[in-house]
Length: 193
Length: 261
Image (cartoon, rainbow over the protein chains, first blue to last red):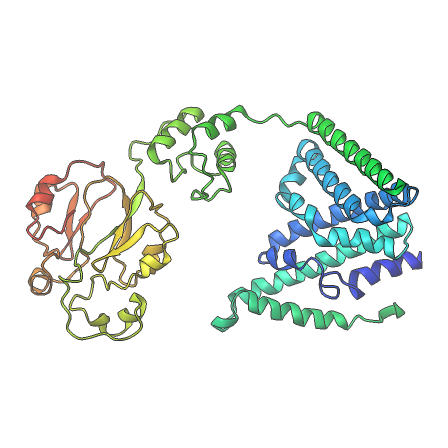
């Protein structure tokens, strides 16, 4: 149990996917201008990342390992994740339209998100079991949500602040992100992880 | 060699399974779309320009069905398409509906403008307006640096002889030029109304006569001809665009400075 908690917090804070690993930065800057969109994006990421890491774990250990085709994992993971997200979209549209509308465009958007693929790879590289990889992906997507929601708050404030003209827009966003990243470095070696 | 074969076979089978799964799911989870959406899409221009504020023509049709956007919102299609969409939705176009465009309320081209000093600053209307009116004798008229041309996202404004010319086919009445103009001489008016006062000067007629040959002198002839449409307020004729459009040529022809167009 403590091991699972350790995996979760390591992924959530210490190795935060956005601010320490610098993966999925495109969506980090793209959809963080408003709190609303970042909430939609993070819910979609939590949803897709958890399910896709589970499915890609099964695909790796039950199809690729028995056939000694581990080198094909990139192609197979892309295939599984893309089909899976399509399937989820169809399911949500029919069964839970309110959730479908809340996630809206973000669901198909993160089909090709690098964070989703990275988590599938890292869970294999760390030789996690099925449960461990599930907890790991929950931690990573939680960390993603934490970072993007905090960042959206900051960007909403900086949008109203008297920023010098040459720093307006993306420059100040990059600086804010860099400072946040430095702050997250403070979590390194926390709980001895 | 076997590794080639196994990889091809395994990937092929995987791909086939996923494709079959998706095909089944697409059928099983099919959402019945409102047939009105297809009917509206059929009458829309279908170029997905986004000028209405929707992502695509399909998205526009969906939003019309859900009542999130006015059925007459298709900017490119104008009145014609609005009528067709209204027919699908079973609503009639209000009598006063007209496509709106931006109109410039100044007629003084570069040749007509009188200057009282030379402005040599930044070639922007906003800058020129700050420095003693950019050197123009008229403190209401067009400065001619084309700030409106710069902000127009639809390339509908062209500077001709120092005056913005608006192409009504491209203009979507988005209002960017209205806010960009430091002298507030652009406004959004119904297209094909048939009367635009091409002057914004609130100076008395005697002053206007001295500095401009195409300015409104507040003579009230238009008001006498068509009192429902024209009103002279602060030495300037204004058109009441809430009225139904009609032929204004009587007033236009009698205007002594030809500032009504």
